[in-house]
Length: 318
Length: 295
Image 1 (tube, chains in turn cyan, orange):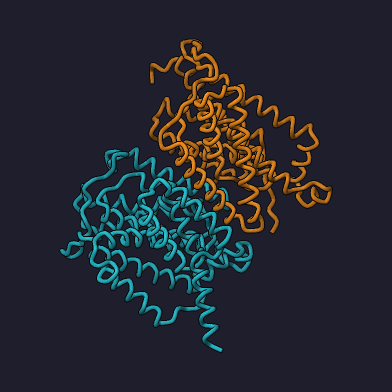
Image 2 (cartoon, helix red, strand yellow; image 1 turned 90 degrees about the vertical axis):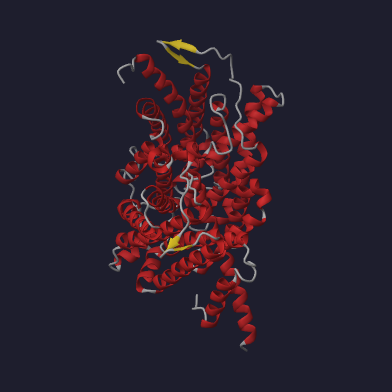
C-alpha cells in the first residue's frame, strides 16, 4: 500500500480530534463507545503485527490484554500506585511473559500454534480465577481508580477519549514505522516463506519473538486503558472469546495492513452498540461476519476502501 | 490425603473414564477429518453440543430415546457436511491460516446459533437406562458411564472395521495418503472430504448425546472438550486413531486424579501445561514418528 498523502493524515487526525465536539456532541455516551473502540483498535493493530505481517496465528491475544488490565488494576487499587507507572509495569510484565513464552511457542506452526496460544489464554484466565486473593477471582476486581496524570483526572468520558485516542495514534504510528522499516520487511519475508528467509541468514526465531513482545506490549497498554475506563475487571472480559473477537475485527478490517484493523475494530464496536438491543445475537453476528469476510471479502474493509480510492483517482488522472 | 482409600481412587477412575471417553471420541472425530483433509476443525466441540441439545429437545418433545439418538446424530452429521461443502470447500486453495480462522468462524456461528435456539441455560437428559448407581468396592458407578464406555467401544470398532475392511474406507484412506494418486485411481477426494466431515461431526454428536445425562449441556459446553480432544489428538500423533484413543483416556484419567487429589481450580492449568509441554517436546506426538518436511 502506498503511503497516505499528508492531506489525508491531517484530515483523519482532525476528525478524531474534533469528534467529541461535533458528532459526539460532547456526549459522554458516544465518547464512551469510542473509548472502547479505541482500546480494541489497539488490540487489533497489535495482533496484526503478529498475524498479518509475520504470519504467526494467535487465538490467545487476550492473555496480554488481561496482564495489562490486571497489573494496572492491582497496583492502583491495593498498592496505591499511580496509573502511569502501573501501566508501564503491566507492559514490562507482558513483555517478559511474551519473551519467555515466545521462543518455545513460536517454534510451533499452524494448528499447534493456534492451540498453544489458545491454551496460554486459558491458563492466564484460570490463574486469574484461581489467584483469588490477588485478583478478586471470579467475582472481579472492584474500585479501580480512573486514569490520572500529573494531578489531572481523566474521569469523564470526553477527557478519557483524548487519552485513549492519543494512545491509538501512538500505536498506529509505531506500527507504521515498524512495518516500513527493514525489521518489518524481514517480518514479511518470514511470513511468505520461513525456510527461504532462513537461507538468507535471517534468525527467524529472534524476529518472531521480538514482534511477539511488541504486540504483547501494545495489548497490555490496551488492557491498562481498559482497566481505568471500566473501573472493574472480571475474568470473563479476557477469555478466548475476546481473543476471537479481536480476530474477527482484524479479518473484517483487512489483515496485513495497519489501517485495516483500525477500520475493523471501529466497525465491529459501533455495530455492537447499534445492535445493543439484540445482544444475544452478538456471537452469531460475529461468526457470520467472519464467515462472509473470509468467503467474499478476503482483503477486508480496507481492501474495499482502497479499491474505491484507486478507481476514483484513476478517473481523475487521465 | 491420608483418607484417600481404594474407594476414592476407584471413584476418580470412574469419572476419569467418563471424561476420557469424551476426549477420546472427540479426538477420533478430529483425527478422521484430519486424516482426509489435513484440516483440524475448531468447530468439533459445537457438533458435540448441538448433537446433545438436539437429542434433549427431541426427548422433551416425546420422541422415544432409541429414536432420538440416531436422529440427533444424523442431523448433526448433515450440519457438518453442509459446513464443509458451503464454507470450507471454497477456501481449499487458501493457506492453512485462513482455514483455521474459517473453522473458528464456524464454531462461533454455531455457538451463537445454539444460544439463540436453546438459550443460555443448561439442559440435562434423563439417563439411558434405570438410574440405580452400582456400588463397587465402596465407589458408586452410574449406569450411564457403562453406556458411554460401551458406545465408545462400539464406535471405535466400527471405525476400525470401516477403515480396514470396506472398499469405501480404503478409498478414504487412500485420499489421505496421496490425494493425487487417489484421484488418478478414480476416487473423488471431494467426496471423501465431505464424507469425513459428516462422519467427524456424527461422532462428535454421538459423544455429546451419550454424555448429556451426566453433564449439564449449555451452548458453551463444547469449548473445553474440543480443546482437550485436540490435546489428546496431538499427544496421540495427529493422524493416529489408536493414539488418539489411548491419549484421550490417559488425559481424562489424569485430569480426574488432578481434580480429586490436587485442586479443581488449577486442573485446567495443569492440562494446558501438559499440552504446551507435549507440543514442545514431542511435536509429532508421543505415538507419532518423526515426519520429514519437504522444502
